[in-house]
Image (tube, rainbow, N blue to C red):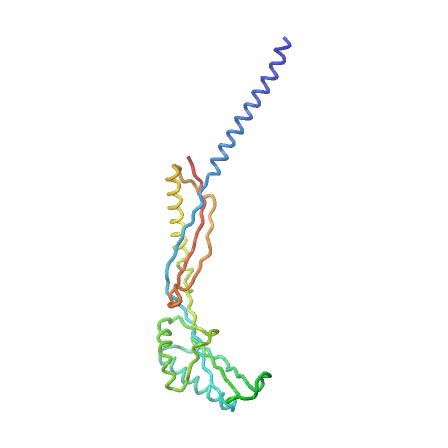
Length: 235
C-alpha cells in the first residue's frame, strides 16, 4: 500500500516532465521553422542623360590701371553675352558675378617685381536645361579668342557640372525592378533548398546614387538602387 502511494506521485512527476519535454521540443520546432529566412539583394541600374548643366565662363585680364580693367570687363562681358544670346541662351539662364580684383602690391610676400599690378577675374555662369545646346557652345568657346577673350580652362574650382534632376520620375519603376530581382534570387534559393518562399519579413530600400558613367562623359549619369529583402522559408 505504501509502495503504491509512493509510486503515484512519481508517475505524476514523470508524466509532467514528459509533457514539458514535448512542449519544449514542439516550441523549438516552431521557433526553428519561424526563423528560417533568406536575405537577398536586388539591383536596379540605368543610364540617363543629364537634364541640367552649369557652365562657369571664366576669364582673367591684367594691367596697371584698375578703372581701365573694369571697363574692359564690361566690353568682354557684352561680347560673351552676344555669343550666348546668338545661340539661344536667355538672360534667365545667365548670371554675371562681380569681378574679383587681386592687387599684387598688397601681397606682403611680393618682391615688388611684377609686370602687371592688378589681376581681374570675371565669371559668367550659364545654368540651363538645354544641355545639348550648352555642350555645343562649350565646344565653340574658342571663337571668343578671335574677340580677344582667353577663357581659363584649368581652373578646377570652376568646372562644368552636369546634373540629373528627374530621379522622382524613375524611382517607382526602379524600386519595382530591384524588388523583382530580389524576389527572383530568393525564389532560386528556396527552390535549391527544397523550400517554399514565404512572406517578406523585412524590407530595406537603399539610397539612390547618381554618378558619372565615366570620366569622359559626365553628361551621362549612372543611377543605382539596391533593395534588401528578407523572406520566410517554409518546409
